[in-house]
Structures are given as structure tokens and as C-alpha cells.
Length: 236
Image (spheres, rainbow, N blue to C red):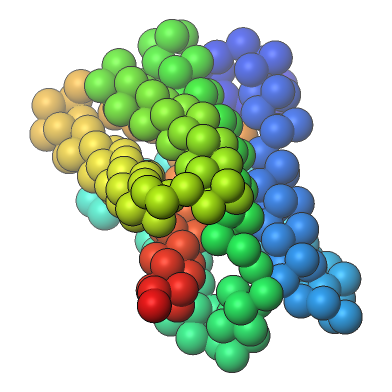
């Protein structure tokens, strides 16, 4: 019996499991760079936290916590919302967060969003009809555009181009709106599914794609707010 969702071939699920840890290591690496002298210990803490969190999400998924189709989506109540509150209320306001931002360059915070190429799995899920095409296109294209454009925004910041900061403000807002639009689309499609029986986003509550709503929205929103904070810190 396969542990993977039956909506896509197993190789898609396996490939997803291979790439989904990449953002964790990139974030841990960023923390290490932002904490000279104690970076290794702090990055290890970040890795440990997210690995434990991923095990929790996997356990909850296999225990059937996310199977109920409801509003708000059950997976968000047990994973995304608590993680977002922890990151935005606790971590964002820690003194160490401010110290880390002081040591990091703005381009480093932008460049890490390259990991959003993983959002191309939305397009793959849409291709296999595992997700409605509307959310597959909105989420997949938005993530890929944000990821690819982060390279050029980071390059402009490194080269200290005159318009680099304005470009960064615009890019960061686009990336934030994209993740919020994806979350809103999932919520709307779930509501429609409950009311009409139309296809919803059930696959995002199944293994291994349950890691997308559990990890991505909260973490990405947090990273975007860190960029806003850094931009404000560097204002003359």
C-alpha cells in the first residue's frame, strides 16, 4: 500500500520529498550568515525546529487529521496558523531577529526566495488534474515568477543600482500578494467544494503535499515581512 497520494504518479511525490527540505537548509544557512560567531548553533536550532515540525505534520497527515473538508481548512488550523503566529508574534520580535537582520545584506534576504521554484509543483499537480487549474496556475506561475525575478532583484541590489530599492519594494509586494492570493484561492475552492461537490484542494491535505500549506505560506509571509523590515532599516 502506497503512503503517497493516488492523484499523481509516485515519482512526482518522491521528487517533491527530495526538494521540499531545500528551503529549510537555505533558511538555516541565512541564519548562520547573520550570526557571526554563533551562527552554527543557531542554524542548527532552525534545522531542528523545522525537522521536528515536518515530522509533526507528517504524523498528523497519516493519522487522518487533515481528511475532513471544512472551513477553515483543518490543515491550516493545526499547522499554518500556529506556525504563522509563532513566526510573526514570537520570532519576529526577538532581539536576535533584529541582530540577524543587521548582519545580513538585503540581497541575501531576496535571493533566498529562489526556493519558490518548488511552487512549480502546483503546475504539475494541475497537469495531472490533482488540483483545479485556477489555483494551479495562480500559485505555480506566481511562485515561479517570484523565484526567477528574485535573481535580478538581488543582482540590482548587489550592483547598488539607483532603482534597486524601489524594485525590491515592488518585487517583495508582488511576492507577498502572490502567497496571499494562493491562500485565498485555496479557501474559496474549499468553500465551493463543500457547497457544490466540485473539485477542491484535497490533495494539499494528503501526503506528501500536505507540507505545502503547512510550511510554505507562514514561512514565506514571514520572510517577506523581514525584507520590509530590512528596507525600513536602511532608509536614510
